[in-house]
Image (cartoon, rainbow, N blue to C red):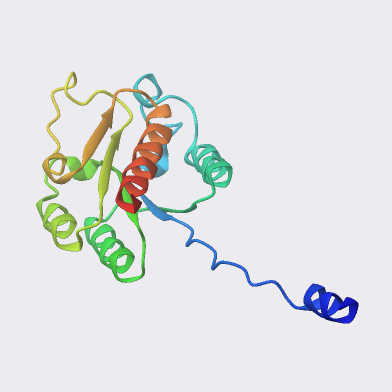
Length: 166
């Protein structure tokens, strides 16, 4: 009897497969590489690198994988979104920035890729008279909360993805 119990103890435990880590892609659109320098009265003085550090810290604290992609070229954003859809990214958070005005090809991409999409704008674009052509394909939109809006957008995406699991 004792020998049998010892064998059981030595037997490797069978563990449940680990849950897949959520992957979120954050795309920073045209002109956002210049955060901290460009119109600080609207966008603040935090640099893109400092914002990236904050967002990666958020991802670490909430146990999800975050890729941040900056581009000033709409076609690069389109290619990255399609790649994300094909490679198992779970959701997209994007500040389209300069793509807001005429990003109709990007809008078509968002519809085709069919990733859940949360849109983020640092300033309140409505009060500035800006209409984003991408907003109607977003699940939701965070606007006017400064850089804190990014955390709000990421948390909204985590909430959406958790609801899909239920």
